[in-house]
Amino acid sequence: MKRPVSVTSPDSDDSTSSPVSRELLRKVRLLELRTRLKVHDLFGGQYQSVFRGQGMDFSEVRQYFPGDDVRNIDWNVSARMGQPYVKIYKEERELTVMLLVDVSASNAYGTGTSLKREVAAELTALLALCALTNNDKVGLLLFTDKMEHFVAPKKGRRHVLRLIRDVLAFEPESRGTAITSAVEYALHALRKRSVLFLLSDFADSGYEKAVRVAGRKHDLIAVELYDPRERQIPPAGLIPLKDPETDELMWVDSSSASFRRAFKSEAVRRAEERDTFFRSTSIDRIELPIDQPYLTPLIKFFRARERRK
Image (cartoon, rainbow, N blue to C red; front, side, top):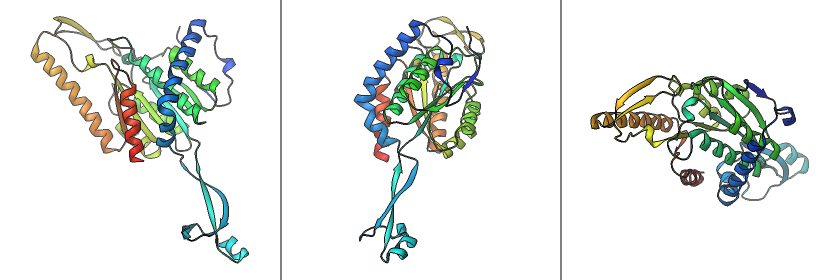
């Protein structure tokens, strides 16, 4: 049964949600346990060092010592005390993390043991638990060619379990993909600078302007999920290719070497265009093939970003 488009405020109580099956609860707990181990073993410290606070808060004043930055001198206090005092600041550690997850029909695809959407669910759990471990707020936006489901950022284990449940169980009303609409919704919903993870196969076009704006306002990380069969077809004779978002069907002769070369060349061209775009905007992009463990490219990203910081 399809669920209606929904928007949940930070103050709404999870108990008002529709009943969930024991099987779904089992999946949520299992996914939490599996990803929690990865959080503690691999990502806890790196997450905190990679995604730092978004500003500095005033803490106190103290007497000036040689070597202190003279730009931090509090002249009013110094005048009253008769000697120089400086302002001390502390980093604003708390972050807001927003997970934008593509649940269009093309993400219900996978030729191996997992679908793209299942890998996206694991990543959602992993990133949400990282936020929970570091006492950050985390929210969720599920989208197709429209905004399907939004849960405002909030703290707490119960909230994180709700996000995991939603991404596992939600059935979208639409089939297409509109990254622009999702990004623009997030831009309007988030008041302060946040960390945005955009999880999608990027089977869309025309999103560049919205993503560029979001990348300037927020810390945006694009996570591209793909199945290798979407980039290279094996020789298997006459086979049907169906667009999951439009249901358009086309029969092709995969035994033709020229067809396989053309198919691969077009897929590589589109991937290179996306890579060029994200590089030009200085937005981080992670490519995750769903037929391989996703931890390796994630660890590589975290370590590379930590070195840059």
